[in-house]
Image (cartoon, rainbow, N blue to C red; front, side, top):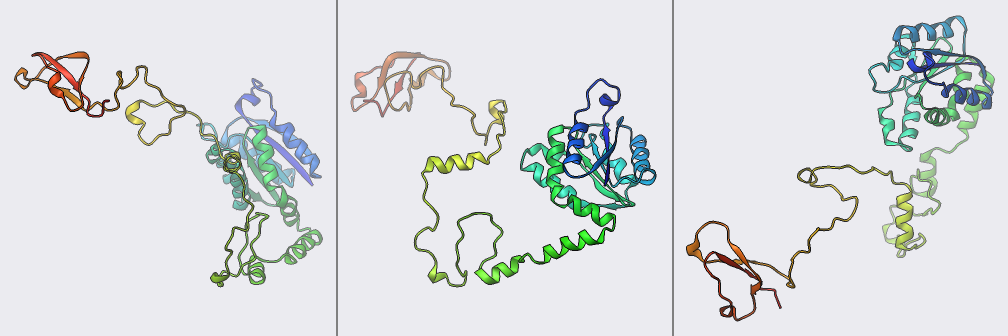
Length: 304
């Protein structure tokens, strides 16, 4: 089967940047028995992309076209729009497989807008511009790619072989009927239990016990790092501190456990007062301390 590579990039077209995605796609073709017929570099121009794809489909009769680039949010990213204009059928399952797999690698995959579809007997697949993302996306659809191309060529014999093999696989309902539970998990610790027989449930966990540190490690292995964000204090409500914060001065700045307030002379009225340093009213004998006009004294009911 013949494949074509279309690199959509202004910078690669102007030769201000080297095309690296094309070599990655070419290697994928070789590893999957696809003959790489051509590699074309075009700018991010909708009409040029459309005309290139139409020629490869209608004149050159390619079995597969893989594009790279122009699938993001930038103003000149128009590869999906150009592809939609010339395809006759969409292939949303391939797009779903690529996005689902990519989201498990990086959350920024949600910003990708690939389109996959069919024109005549040619399958067109949009992939991102990053060589790493290209490899990942092609590998996500690899299990069904060969079968898809066989269907488009109406190659009935291998198609029948694939369909017969699929028919021999047990369905989820058959598994549920045989074991008493619907299974989709890949966990190796299976529990054979009829959900109707609650009284016969396990009294002890059938799963191996592990240390808390090990469990936390396993969880963190599958967590995506969100990175640090700097925010003003007034907008930080509900956020999690990236690191511990320490006051530049010790609080309270004297040997006491609680500071409840200050004793003042009411007749002084509103205004600033000087604090009597190294003194506080605490314990059961406040009369031992005296507050002078214009001054205030700390009240520490919890002081020792």
